Length: 390
Image (cartoon, rainbow, N blue to C red; front, side, top):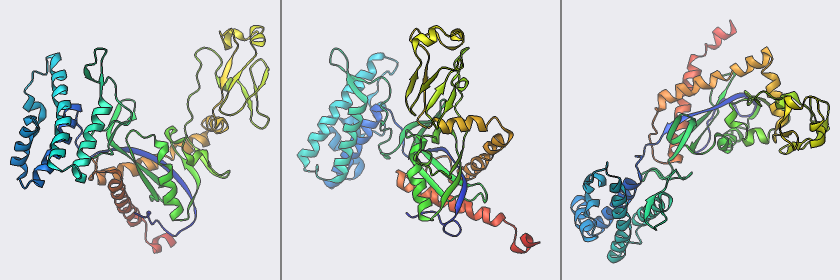
């Protein structure tokens, strides 16, 4: 689909990256309705293969398969159960699981199993069954407690997923990611990921856009969700990263920030001047004997094994970020990220809260389209060359 053409190729960017929810266009359904929806689509394809009209053919073939409920627009309505009865869900699950086998048999009987739409519908039904259904101690089928991480939530859009933007904000669909040039407010790169994918996973999409324009990052302003991305992990030495660091707390006892980290020599020194070697990504364990004799022990640890400190793989960067946000200049740099939040709000207003299309690829194309519209608006707001010269 190409990349976003923004200005002349080449150059270094001061940029900020952020994401917002993009709710999927496919209908989100529970397990019973997901299975019924997939099987209804299969029966409909088989009906057309036999020369029937969709509605009539679906009704005839659903009855032939022994599952007339599949012909109804709502499987749960057709089952006509008292859903306040705890036994109703188990009964409905038994009916729909039996329908999976019957529709598979019907497809084989009618010779329609080779049709790609039939195969896709049956595969979707099996996928939902395998991820959502288990058995209890008596071997009775039950809907699993909890949610499978990569659980399918829509028959129409197989790539939609449950996810979260924040602890309290659930997303059913995708996340859109926007990289904003802090100097021009133009958008040179975008990405779309499934809602259950960590923000950091969009890095390759952002890199592809930047590489296509022969552009590199001189400065990157992000939130903590992107700290583990390859944009940060594999950064060149001259890339400046600005982000609000994770808070470091340890209750009433010494936090990690009370220890001195010598990154050049790989040494960690505690408040009592005991020094131990460390490696990034590892855990430092101070000697139990030294901690037991330490006059500061009560302020540091209650463990009989001595104080331990976990060192992040990118601890040097985190230390720099913590130090920067203690300065007026560092806090001012963090506030610059508001530009990408405004850009996301503009793009969200034009693209909408809900995706226009099914699937990640088409929605990425749509996000590119909206980003181009945004860029044209930004360019249109610029003063004329004559006014700039004046």
